[in-house]
Image 1 (cartoon, rainbow, N blue to C red):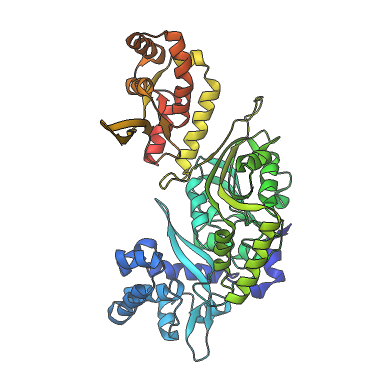
Image 2 (cartoon, rainbow, N blue to C red):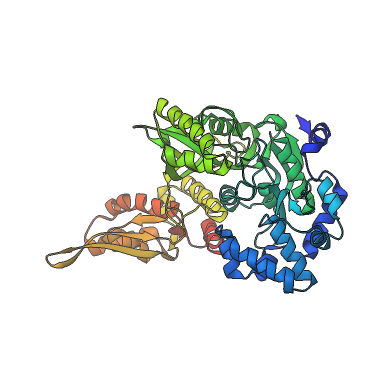
Length: 531
């Protein structure tokens, strides 16, 4: 295990922003220029900013050129910063100097932030961009991706803010934690968000350049993380945490490591399996881990069995969600486009990759998230594992939904059928969806379901009796009384109806459709609504 100081001492030329004085001055200049998410949106305008986020650059180029030409000093400085770091343009040195009066162009060139080109123009060497959550504005330091600079990215390329990293950040349960671990921190985006609710943050990476950029990200935002070099749990051997998060190099492949940010150097999906299997030794009792993962799907096999095998013997409760299953060509194409290789090199690599998939009978790659929780101290029971596919738009796993899901599973484990019959239950805000087909006598209903909008897989098929039961759950009378009323109305035995209804009620509770009125689950319902 290496400390970051040892890392930068060995390779000072490959690690930018090692001078804290320059980092502080850079941060002061960027903030003085108004380089925040709101500041960028205001200068560009919402339509132009939205276009930029979609990869349409030219409106932003035109807007910033106009600000440089016609705006005041402040607007001109912000326009220059946007052109350098978000648009990748070359700028005149005197214009750049005006944008960085504290740091100075020479210092930023020396520290690897800017490059002085032949002819005197200045170009950004790093990707530094604003990022925000509900309450904070941040600055994130990473390497420029292939869209900003032609040619393949470097082997030690450090990814910036991407779809996967933001998906994980949105899924993290934001409960207060004393110690948190971020495995494969990259530019530090997960640690940045952990800072709001965790007292101590340890962040690791095998890529020493990533650790240097994560250190710069932390300092620019007034934070301090314990950054350590090493693979998987090696840098934290013997240590335990309340929360572990990871967006690891999960790409399924031959075991080569062409690019550190995506390739683990381990064959297939073995890295994700290893990560899951080693979690119990590093989670405190009741601790949580949330990771992104990819897994192999072989011809004729159920992907659930593969991931369930990773969890077997760990003793962890788990919620595994597959968001997508990509065919090999789509999967390989996605990762080849990220690297920026030329067409011939990409074609050769893609051909070899697809041959390996074919040789190993791999027909798809599953992509999703795994949320686990360690048992509490003294808790002795079988682990509660839910593995499901949720692909609907708007049904992404979020922190409030994950927290509520774990709370509901615990409630169901700890509440017997007899106890449940004594509970007063309420129905969450839901919609009844009815499905009909045209027939000889008009529309004929063929099915119905109750859906909680925005909830991952929060849908429950219902018949006439179960939807009447749900409609009656208003938190006023016990479930047993509702069942007896329905039994009397339909002329059936109340005990028999209860036996048939309880599995439906439990499923509805598990999906967040029903909850105990004024009980421990009512708070989780409020949390999900607000989240």
